[in-house]
Length: 107
Image (cartoon, rainbow, N blue to C red):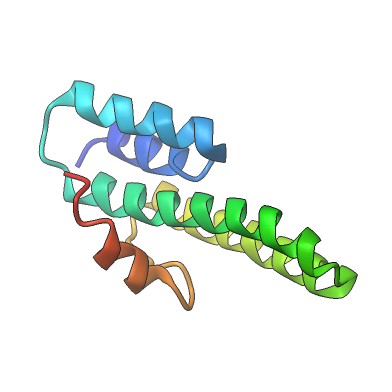
């Protein structure tokens, strides 16, 4: 695996725009890289989770829950981004296996 794979996988955790850039870069490289696809699935799941939290938590209007969820999602981005940069596959805690199964359509 080359260094570009680590960079693309890490970009999947840098905002939704970073995920789009990583996905396009993966398509342009035209190689079947399972490492990058793993991190793209995890990053997509985190991005969707963050959007859902940003929509639902203000409706619930519990300040403490909002802060805890925000810090938790941010910590997940950092955790997964570090391991992607190091070249390791680590699931997002608690929900990563679900993300990997549900986003199998990404190839």
